[in-house]
Amino acid sequence: MPNAPRETPTFEKCLKTLHLTIELASQSHKVWLEVGHFVARNQHFPLTRYLIRSSFLTMIIELFKPLDRNRKSYSFRMLLRLAKRQGGTADKTTCAMVSDMLPLWRKIKLLRHKAYAHLDSGRTIASLLVETGNNAEDFETLLKAYEVCLMHIYRTQGLRFTPLQEANDLLDADLSTTTKSLATAAGYPYSWYK
Image 1 (spheres, rainbow, N blue to C red):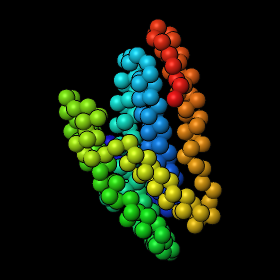
Image 2 (tube, one colour):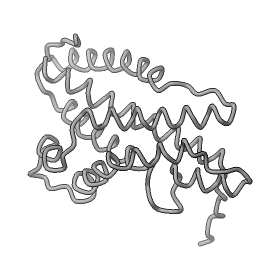
Image 3 (cartoon, rainbow, N blue to C red):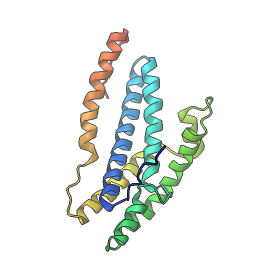
Image 4 (cartoon, rainbow, N blue to C red):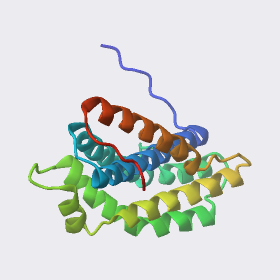
């Protein structure tokens, strides 16, 4: 079987991939929180268990990627290397931002390892959060730091950055409508109020 041609990473491809990764992490975080709020006010039904678990795992995987140490992975680290390679310099502000994100990222890395790579069926999300020292604020803080770093990079490149909240607002409306339809069709009482 022939090998697929290898794609050469570019600054633009890396930046776009990072943006999409962080957007997916943000949307997964939104789903995890909103479905959790829904479950707190309503009867738990099979779809909600799936949505909570899948959005949590997706969020953890996507939160890990932007600071991945693998040299072949699109990440902030690769972006800084590509900036140097393409004749620019590694912006000191971006380097400082990446350095500042590392302590939270390391907590996410541990959680990713325990929740995704070696998931014990007896563990709950809550027990994993306690065991790894993570909490919901850590996810929000890291997402915000990723977004601020991306906005800075976009600005230095003269590009327009679309805030993550815009996509999350659209997602919130879709979640409400979809969950109401599914709950009603399955005969479960419904309340989406926050």
